[in-house]
Length: 450
Image 1 (cartoon, rainbow, N blue to C red):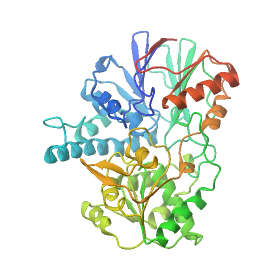
Image 2: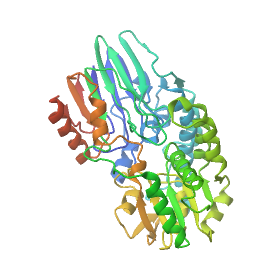
Image 3: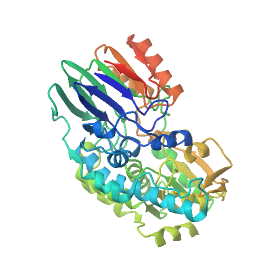
Image 4: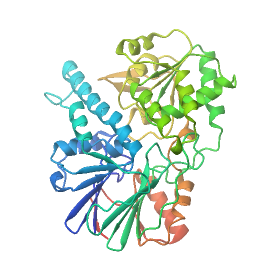
């Protein structure tokens, strides 16, 4: 077996791991690179393997940094099946067409306003191409053993990160490799904790929070503090939030605070049609998270759902304390950009992030204290308060990653991926010191024989 690390190395995006054995090729995850421009440009690079020669793809979960390259792969000639869990398929039916639509809109905006170096600017793929790619998806339940080809087998265990997220164990000819996927937290407010995964000969583990521990703080108290001081200034709280997972957690927390009279009964707007649809999917999969179907319904019922472009535009002229939850979570695109343009320049307001901000994103720049961010070709001053609730992260921290690895029995090799360089190396060192296992941080496009 050979593994090629085609993404998720030196960064938390673009996850792609190609396995080749006995004339078959399996791609584990198929994500978009995001953040720094030099990373985003990789999405346009020629792949080192012919997409038509890849027999199948398995997705660990639906987030765009793990699934968003699938339509491009299909466009380039991939003709196989994309396997994933049921909830991942349902979420990809929302996320992938939205990704294509945003790319079309960004290209159109760049062409109309002339702020692209490309003439014309083109989308990586279109909404229709994303919908076409969804025809190749096939759902497989957690725990079900799949044997697509002689000598190969795989199954998924729950990873607790978002709905449908799994850790993938692949077996071949008596050997095995385990991909952690993105791991959730043991005490997440929304999701159930990750399941213990079966031991494997090789382990590929994410390291988003390698070397970092989540603050020991009460999330509801911190969130209430941000909302209350912003309301006291007469300001607006703008929350960039991932439509899947983070938006649902935030709405649940805000509802709990209102019920306990810990924050004012101010309007809460959900300006993300995809997040609205994703919340309905959460109602269908209550076995994966901590909320009941009724709690999911109540959470959405107490929220003003914004659907049309006209309604979204009106949110930029609010004159009273309010909360706006809108995608995307790192402010890389989506409707939230228009709200940042409207509210970031006013010191009465607050821009509240909720979790990890990848290098090169507007979210990372704002959390680091920049005084301006570039949006739609122009710089927008940032005078609003900027806060980040890291306690709302959906990623396991350093200690939780090590605890998950404790269930392994001396693998032959551990590969630390899906982390920025300092984080990945911190987890590598901790694994070596704790267990003495051979451990390495792969480079982009590195190959290894297993």
